[in-house]
Length: 116
Length: 112
Image 1: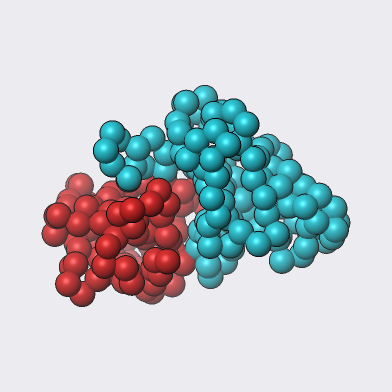
Image 2: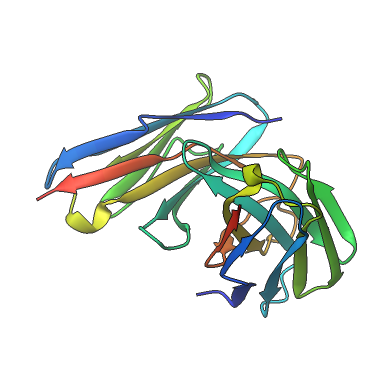
């Protein structure tokens, strides 16, 4: 498995509290992604990063922010958690071949977040 | 953005039979189509992919076909085995950005 870890793996929190999920990689890959997985919706992209301090929104970015101050870390923050953000969150990394926009995604083990 | 639809959402097959999962995409500029397998409680992992300049690709018991004109691609699993039971996701990648759009997933159950 690629060197990618997520923390925490499980978290229960209350509505309105801030939550930060961390993704850490040891592969020195440039591209990092945060997805959420919900039944019937598959994997939906929240935010992604194409370099240190370079991030962009995905299809379900409302209510989430990200930061990437180092190549190895990509943080996902829920400023004020809501019950609709109860989900399994997956971080992924990708090494794109030179001149290519595509490459295999390596996923972390997932973080299960429950917002009560 | 890209919209990927995947069918069926669930699929039950007898061990030894074939399974077929179909996906359609909306953006004709998409050029890369991977398939990911997610076993229960595990992370998704790439099992096969195809690029737009290829019509078919095979790897042992799995194969993927692509019809660019119709904008659809399919995963074929032959001689299914219990370890093929999992959720399968198709995805499409637009040629000008760095992100994948995933289908909603197909839960495949192989009956012994």
